[in-house]
Image 1 (cartoon, rainbow, N blue to C red):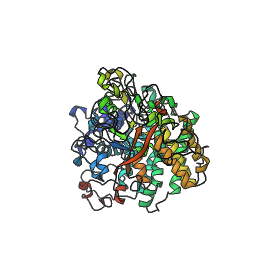
Image 2 (image 1 turned 180 degrees about the vertical axis):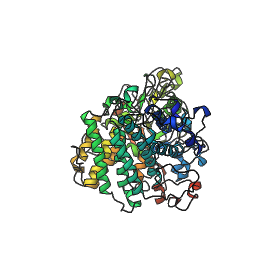
Image 3 (image 1 turned 120 degrees about the vertical axis):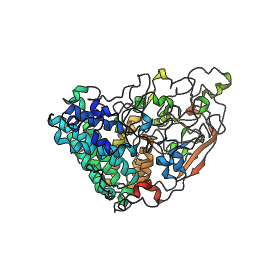
Image 4 (image 1 turned 90 degrees about the vertical axis):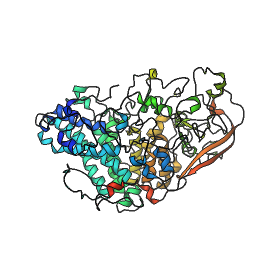
Length: 629
């Protein structure tokens, strides 16, 4: 299948001869694919071809292996059939597991033995291609003066893309490892490395400069440029102003967050100045989107799934109008082989590795009136929650994302009569779906990223259904919530707002809630910043659930080693009456509702960061290991 990014020039996509020499362990090239420096940079078509290899350095974290692990907070737990994924290693405090020499299966998307910019999803990893991408971006920036046969628009497009990728890869590394050397020039291959690790804030400032300049140079929509009309309608993945502003704001918000502020020399609270800068970047972005100048907008809740999967559309890339930044896909049918099967239990599906939402995380999905559930085992007259009817009156996103006991899972026929009982989700204690090895360990299933028909009977993941699962790195809802956080912390209250955008922090949260049909943030949370932040974090947990954000959020908030965020739980209960298929499962009464701790993660301060590779930190004294590792 063709990727949703059309190359300007196939021949020029390959690296220059002098670019491959110092990075030969990353890429194997056919000698005929190498082009001269003069040809690669002489005009826009060729230079854009050179630049577009950078798009194929972006790992697809949701489809990089047969099954894929990317949720490493307290949000998800894996079935016990296998233990090779990084998420399992994290449970034991083994953060070394992100590295390829600790991953015999080569299943992780952060580091692999083989890296290439070809069309093989198994050859993409963040560490390997990230450093290659930074070097390539610097190589392009160093040769901009050779681009003489081009308009000013074309020169701006090239430079803007290169700056974005240099900033993006540095940011991606920083959020996992902390301050690193910021490589902003082509390093000679024959010189000894001496670049020191910078403070997180110093790295963030350099990344911000790259993102800011990229935003100044790039259009909101390539289709509206003269150069972009060459590939009209196929420019959705090309780096634009909105992507650059999104990461400018995220970079500033991360720099202002408690963990990053503390290691930069500040305290363990937020850095208000960085948060104000973040709010300004997000405000600029949101104003462009809401005015219609940029093509990004929230999808209606009825089409919420299009953010993550499409079906019956010839493997059309998901994301619709809400996706901001995502990479190209490498064989659209690949998600049918693994990702689309890793959520339904083996009893109705295929494959043994399953990823389950923890009960403690599902509890963040509050009530439709917008109020949280204080204790899943106790009645709450204020919110209306009743533990005898735990599925009734919940946030609509709960019903969209989570499968609970009694939900119909198979729409079509089940040929074997002995299996007919499995048509409905038997997730009560002792139910047929409750298999810790290949089913649910928690009493819930996650179906945010796949349709209910993704099972062996309905064959919703069959080739003829063209089910395509592909998650974005950033979408517009995330921007609203990051703006809400930055504005609140920058200006000290739920009424905080940037100077360039009309909405307050709480207004931004309510935009997301109103899209989902959830009640607005209640007045009881608006008087105290600490109380408001609890509700803001709960909203972020629900809206962005299982999209790969939680691990980094818990770390930057300095919460990953604190209870209850170290706990992973299951929900246990009995059915009050036999299942009635004619009854709405939301109205099923349960008995003896309780939670059970599956595991407790024993983390310490060192787990705020991932360990760097031993070989790398032994290169020179100015590049030390992260504390505790």
